[in-house]
Length: 231
Image: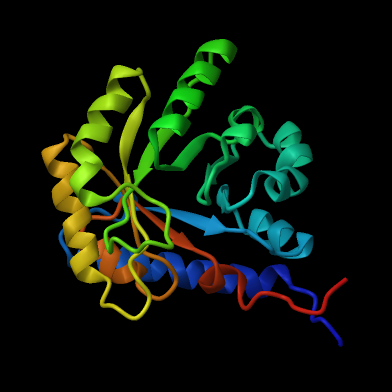
């Protein structure tokens, strides 16, 4: 199988198009365009596409796995001080130390045991990462995230531990309209005094922007289809 090598021009065009759509959605909703941060999801992407995104000026990226993120970013972090890395996939407690060393933001805080491990590691290294709590808005048994009925108590527990909570994150159920989940997440955040809302992906980031997202997580829309069959 022949794999087409990404060009900086091609990726830059997609990146600009996504940013323009975010800006238009924000302005249309009466929000400033700069109120929404684009998190480019670089999981499983080949190195040339990540390099093309960097060449196009993107500096905010999301990764699902600590080990893959290290391969993508450990060397780059030493050379590029303006990178910001978000963990957007599940975090195992035995990976907390590695995650805290590499990332700037944890978007998938979802259980008391993980909260306790993060609090201890933040104290140990003297560095605190901003945290979003992942909410399972669809109450799907196979999906990570705090159930809506438990979220208020979990927010209070995390604050007692001293974690720097900045907002909430959700992944709406596949096959359901996303906007009701975005509105639900916004309501939960408001009553808990949280301003960050990480919601919206390639298929629905404009709706998320209109409904108050502060961060949208876009992979395919920026990088194009994932490469399969590459060595």
